[in-house]
Length: 65
Image 1: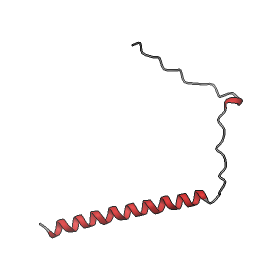
Image 2: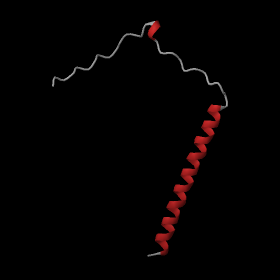
Image 3: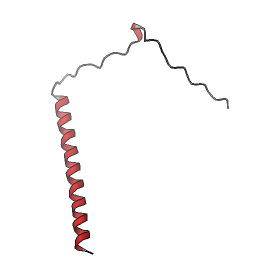
Image 4: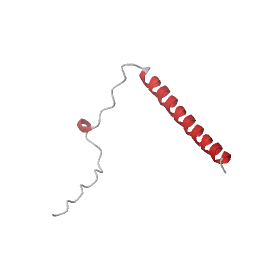
């Protein structure tokens, strides 16, 4: 099979009718904050569980030489 040549990179700016549109505004302004809060809560929970598991493993190793 012949190999396809990659398309050259576009070096000129997009014409006004082809410019990407900005994302639509959120209907609920609190939605982003709730999402961020849930993400931080999940991250904190994961860090806490990981720390607890490692601590228990270290303690168990110290108790069983």
